Image 1 (cartoon, helix red, strand yellow):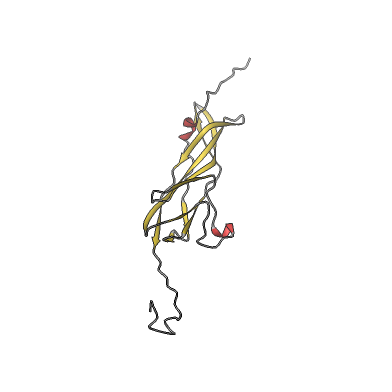
Image 2 (cartoon, rainbow, N blue to C red):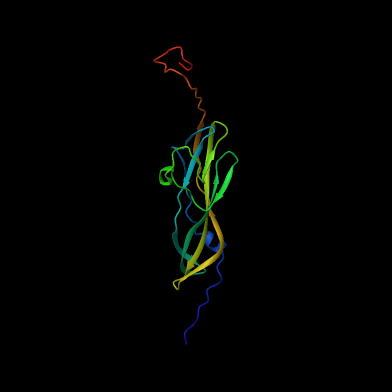
Length: 167
């Protein structure tokens, strides 16, 4: 008769120590923005697996992104189901709003980051078993510089009339 080994119930707390990958957020264009215009933020995260040992058994944890918590560094946060896409991938012009964009009210330097929420499944060599709950990976902060831009409509360029406004 073969001995049956019973694996204890696995919780999200048990697999959290396997540390899912964090994500770096990038602001378009080039982590620079203009007061009053959207900066488009994009964070990349993907499904990945981490091997190790749990309860004395070799196992693999598969982490799957389930949500993104953006912190724009000015007290504004938003949670989304996606890490966003570049304006180019969306077929949009620069400075148009997206689901993950943010418009800053004041010039300055901000530190934006995204925390990625993951669901998990474990495999002890006998198939994948989903784990209830989510584990969060904290993303590194990215410096975003916001500038002011002042424009004026004028009838002539400075070459045409050196006394024009702004010349």
